[in-house]
Length: 400
Ligand code: CTP
Image (cartoon, protein in one colour):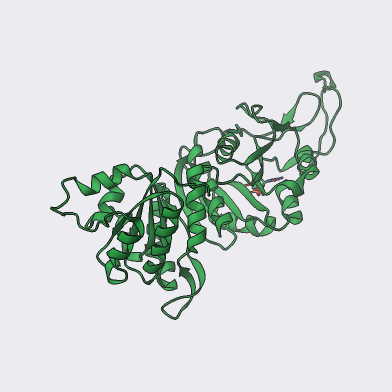
């Protein structure tokens, strides 16, 4: 059997929830896959499962005491430094809130503040607690700081309620950890990214367009490629070089973009529409350059095809469709409308009225809005970070 986690040090943090017993199985499966597992428990976790169980399962001493005199090392720094990955399973509402606010009143919280390792959190709690605004804000705060969440599942809860809050399946958590180590979490995905600005020509040389640079598209392509996805790019005019991608196709107008996308539409598993497509075009295009001697000429403008809406209408099962939007007012409200009208899974809504955000800049002020209506405010972030955040979201979506 290939041991995917051989040589990896995984720190398993267990906090005091009913599903703590499930993390015994997780520790066993991680060990079976070759990992060296160090378990750190909170004192509340010990009310649900015994430290001895983890000790026997992992073959390592279970730590729970910040001030253990029998340990000559500074335990929180030692454990924080040697971990390749930390997973908190299960994570209670109390623990998440303390972590989000930098509180460090036990060994596990100290480790989380001291570590440079990737942190994965698996929440488990009552549905109303999970949906509580304060908890959601704390989760968001941690996500913005790079903490990965494996969302709880929906179903019957130990407290008798039905809803979202049940710990994710241990098998799925294990699968996710393995993929994370390979850093190839999106290997099965065939991704189409559109980027840059479309151009609508009036004559041989004149056109209407917008200042989109294509930077967002490039950041997305790099991020998804790093995670193992196959990348296809259909781009309008860009200031960045996207030609390093094999499946790169250049277009001018919205109609050309639509036609190119349509050719292989059903082969894409993820479509990210980061291009700034012009909403209007000239009713007729002159083949030759209009001469200034012509003194005057008339033109008519008409509405362009909505490329994204066209994709949304033809969307097939399991295809993830992501739009971007640029707004100066009612950013979230308008994004929600676009999600519905264009049949999207997500929209990355950019508030271009904010300083440092918008066309050509290195950052954007965004909100992630999904088809269930949930809104996450990312604030002003670099385009690399926005791409990472979107890739994390899609990873989790594929996970569930
Ligand atoms: N889009 C598209 N075709 C168009 C216009 C927009 O495919 N003709 C896509 C963009 O690529 C983007 C999303 O739709 O992913 C939202 O674009 P945006 O310009 O914010 O919104 P519009 O739908 O054009 O609406 P409005 O300009 O009225 O805000």
